[in-house]
Image (cartoon, rainbow, N blue to C red; front, side, top):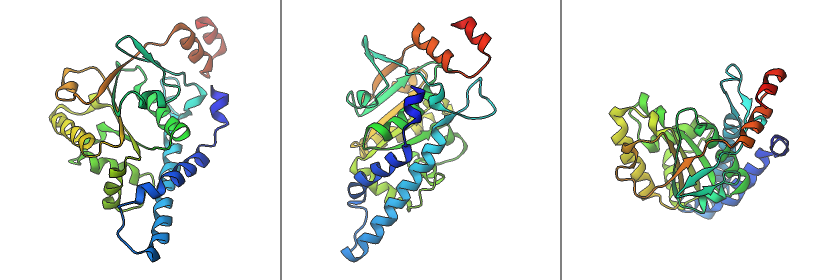
Length: 260
């Protein structure tokens, strides 16, 4: 898998994704004459392209227990994780298998099960396998401020070189061109969990044409009123996949041999 993904030009594909989406994204954002449309189209296209280029750089690398000091390319070691719902197994190699299930999905897994790493794979896979524009939100970032979820989303993409005004970003949400990853609901402080829950419900109701994938540890609080999310449970790695993961890791060969 690592060799296959290493041959992918994510930035070129990202440019193609923006090109395919641009007219749909900006429809309804600007109320201007045709003389201004060309310049605004160019400005908007640049904003989204710059964002995705920066996001790819950020989310294509990850720190692990073995690689604590330096982020490693995710596909140097990543192994696909299966999900299960009602005894049905859903593979995550191609995110379209998830998108075909529902627009709103909650992925449940224990601590250290690899939820965030899975999300980074799904983020990159969104770019290569769909025409959606992905947004990755770490919900724990809401613990340190009074931001709404929309504000947090805009702040997240702004730090990744998205340079359009917030009002234009909000208007673009109506057109259903986004796949929004809400990572780590279980990491939200208890004091703001109800507010964040209400923000998520409001977001998915108001902008229901987009896709939403949320991750969390299991919690009764999570599903209080969240009837519009399909729940999927992370499966433990099979023996073959565990051995593949060990084989991909870059550490002492003799130690690896003990496990394989």
